[in-house]
Amino acid sequence: MNNDALRIPVALKLHPYEVVIGGAGLKGIGKELRLAGIKKGIKVLVVSNADVAQPYGDLCLESLRESGYKPTLLVIEAGEDQKTQASIALIHDAAYTAQLERGSLMIALGGGVVGDMTGFAAATWLRGIAVAQLPTTLLAMVDAAIGGKTGVNHPGGKNLLGAFHQPRLVLIDPSTLNTLPEREFRAGMAEVIKYGVIGDRELFELLEGISELATPSELKTALLEKIIERSAAAKSKVVSSDEREAGLRAILNYGHTFGHVVETLCGYGTWLHGEAVAIGMVAIGELAVMRQSWSRDDANRQRALIAKAGLPTSWPKLDPEAVLKTLQGDKKVRDGKVRFVMPTGIGSVEIKNDVSTEEIQACISRLN
Ligand code: NAD
Ligand code: GLY
Image 1: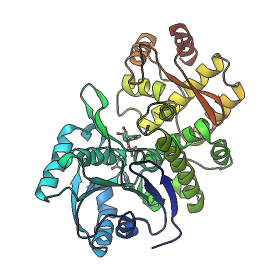
Image 2 (image 1 turned 120 degrees about the vertical axis):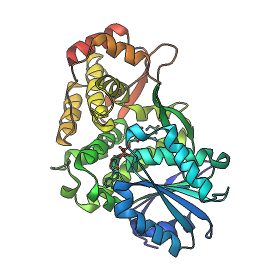
Image 3 (image 1 turned 180 degrees about the vertical axis):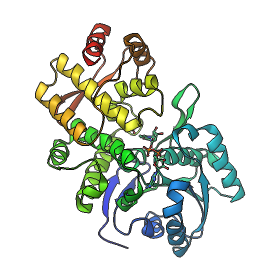
Image 4 (image 1 turned 135 degrees about the vertical axis):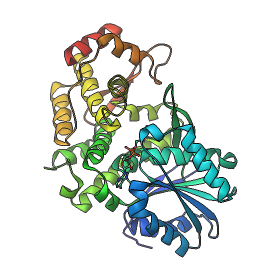
């Protein structure tokens, strides 16, 4: 066991687990599972996609075998367009062929798409078997792998099918980011900036102090681990206090309401999720300034940080009517009111459902 690993508890009453960062990395997966109480001798289905399985699959399988597990690897196609029930069927078929039992384990080795799908397949195989998350994108490390939201898309919308299914372990090996395309890295940085605005002023200031944020190679390992640690800790804290999004967890949607509009109206694939969130954070920042709940200075700081991370900040040309309609169709609408996570400072937000249509229209016209 490598003692250098950072360990963040996700302190849930029923399913507590750890987010482990660094240490022996993927090579240590077998030992970390044993430490998490997963019995040796069990069958393990590792689900991945080619980009990730090729550099890291063997490493994981070897470590699992060394620790007494019986792993098989399933490589699936995994872009956002593959996040479908058909892919879940493929994972279930592999589970059937490998004869996974109630005591078996699935492991997601990949980005958020693999993580969400493997988690959902595990939640539904034999009414729920254990899953471990091995995120390999920055976005999955700081967000998707932690917190137990799993699922797939439906032709009618994103993530419409899903289940809460907490992992038994999240193991983050930051060195896997060395092979991640830089655009994907930057998209993950949007979620990191989000944690700074919603609750961690120190993280925000740490990011402001870094001269080059847009590429992992420019960031020193220790600094990258620190950024991942603070972000994962922020997510774990929110999830620990509100597992099922009864209240506080909604703050994680900061920037996502307008971001969802951008994703939907520009077409999925035009902007990566994190890029749309970046645009969404700038947009909600403008709305907050308009409502005088946030200072122009803070909004400018947020915009500058997002730009430094190599992320887009400009609202695309969109039909205002279509924007309003899309906002009304958002999953976060309650009783016909759009709920916005509104910044009140660097490190604090509030949830507001009293934003009028006129205010939204005025904001959109300022953005356009
Ligand atoms: P992704 O999973 O599509 O991965 C992005 C790309 O990077 C893919 O092409 C993948 O093959 C490649 N890749 C991944 N790791 C790599 C590596 N180390 N080296 C080389 N290539 C690598 O994208 P993502 O941004 O990780 O995840 C997006 C998904 O996550 C969305 O479907 C979103 O809905 C979901 N999500 C879920 C939650 C949650 O709480 N469950 C939170 C946020 C996002
Ligand atoms: N990504 C939002 C959440 O996990 O709640």
